[in-house]
Each structure stands twice: as structure tokens, then as C-alpha cells.
Image 1 (cartoon, helix red, strand yellow):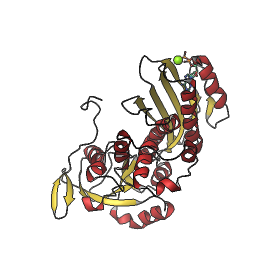
Image 2 (tube, rainbow, N blue to C red):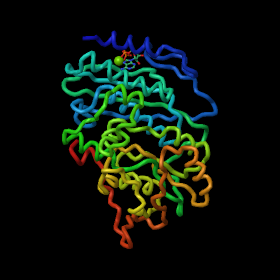
Image 3 (tube, protein in one colour):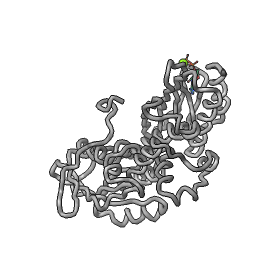
Image 4 (cartoon, helix red, strand yellow):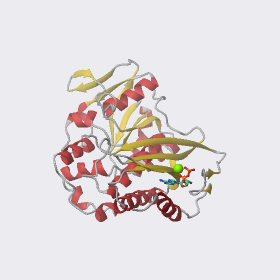
Length: 337
Ligand code: ADP
Ligand code: MG
């Protein structure tokens, strides 16, 4: 089995290429970044624990490496930031063989290359039982251009990218024994026409390979179109609640407008986790700009699902009835997970 230093040396060699703004990468006690005076630096972190956030029984190591970084990229997308650097801390138990570790790192470095983010450091240790992965990601926006949760305005339209509930449905299918019907090679190289025709397979793919909406986030920041934004990691019922809490506003969401993933249920679309789509608000007078956004990203549906209200309540409107939109998304503490 590779020891800690061989593992780090391998990462150091792989990440040795020159990166703008980075004066020192892996190998010293700390990395050194040269801050740019006209940019703000954004930092976020995410911890993944085996058997709580993922299971190698249904996730190929490449896809675990992919997803671990993808969810961090999604946090940068959700602020409208350009992801630049990441740090990876890994606690490795004995059952993670060199082959699994290499495949995991391969999946991670593939998506890192795709989004042009550089690995600049981390920590490596052993673990008694579970594999743990912690990524800290750094990104940048122009001064004042980060899109927060706290700035939604009364009357704004509420929009979401993509579809909702697919990841929760995908997880349900995986737990019931379904598997992705194609090779890692096809997935990593984006050869997915066969899956895209099959709703159940597409849900499994949404769970294992969420697409971070980085380009849309950057567009929303540069164009100043979104008044507030976050990514949907716990279900829209909870996450829209966060925007409302932080912005001190309420919301009305129309059930018939929700972009429910094929094969997913209403409950999964409202409360299911890990879709990693963007949830954002825009001024209703900016319909031309919304049209321009849709033209710029024709491959991603962007749906208006409701609007922001002055009344602090969050309503779900079903036909002519309304009911309170309760935050039923996943809570790690109360679920004991
Ligand atoms: P320290 O004793 O200061 O913690 P380490 O020996 O753990 O130093 O790490 C040496 C170098 O390797 C540091 O630059 C650190 O950031 C980097 N490093 C360690 N583990 C990882 C990892 N899992 N991914 C990326 N870089 C790592
Ligand atoms: Mg260390």
C-alpha cells in the first residue's frame, strides 16, 4: 500500500504545472496565493463521510472523486464565483486500496481540469473505519459581485435551473439495487446519449454525477441579473426557506410549475436533496435579460416557479388551494446521520 508521502508526492507531481496567481502549491507548510486587488476571494468547505454521504457499494471511485469536487464547485456557482483552487483532506481506512484511491483521484482531477481549478494542498491521514473527504474550495468574483442569499426583493421571480427530485429518485433506485448501465469511461467522457433516453438512468446519473452550474452562476453575477441565489442541496422546500429567512421575505411557489425530473415524485422534487441546481431570484422587469440567459444556455431549462412576497409565509400553491411550504429537506443532525 502506498504510504502518505508517496501519495502526496504523486499529487504534487500531477499538480506541478504553473497556475496564474499561485506562487506556491503543494509541498510546503502552506500554499501561497497572490491576491488580486480587484477581486474578492470566496471560500467554502464540504465534508463527505462514507456511508453517510456516499457508499462505494454503488458509487464507482471515479464518480466519488468527481462528486466530491462537483458539490464544492456548486457552492462557488451558487455565489456567482469563478472557482480557482481547492484543498483536499483525506482520512483513509484500510479497505481503500491503492487502486480505489487512484481511481478516486482520477475522477477528481478530471473534473478539476474541466473547470480549471488547481489542487494546492490538503492533509492526509488514516481512519479507523470510514473514508472521509473534505474539500475546501476558493473562488473569486469582481468586487461586490458575489450573489448572496440575503438580497431577494419583494416581487422578484423565483427561478430554478434544470429539474428537481432526480437525485433523490436516483438514490432511491440505487438503494433498491439499480445501477448505472454504462462504463465509467462513457460517463467521464460525457458519452451519455443512451442514458439520456432513460428517465430512471438519468435520475441515477443526477445523483452520482451532478453538474455544477458554474457557467450560469458566473453569467448571473456578471450580468447582475440575480438579486439572490443559492444552490439546492437539501430540497427547494428547505433552501427557498433559507433565502426567505436571510432576505426577510416570503414566497409563493406554484406546484404545477415545478420542473419535476421524469420518474421523480412531487415529494422528491420539493424535499429531496442533492440536486445541486441553482435557485435564484430576479426582478420581474428583467424578462428580456431572462430570455437572453435562456438563449445563452439552451441546454439547461430555466423555470420560473413562483415569486417573492412581503408576507413572510412560504406558500405552495396547488390548483386553487394553498398550503404552507414546510421545510422537509434533509437535516443531518435530526436524522441521526
Ligand atoms: P504538514 O505536516 O504541514 O501537515 P503534510 O506532510 O501533511 O504537511 O503535507 C505536505 C504537503 O502536502 C502540504 O503542502 C500539504 O498541503 C500537501 N498535502 C497533504 N495531503 C494532501 C492532500 N490529500 N491533497 C493535496 N495536498 C496535500
Ligand atoms: Mg499534514
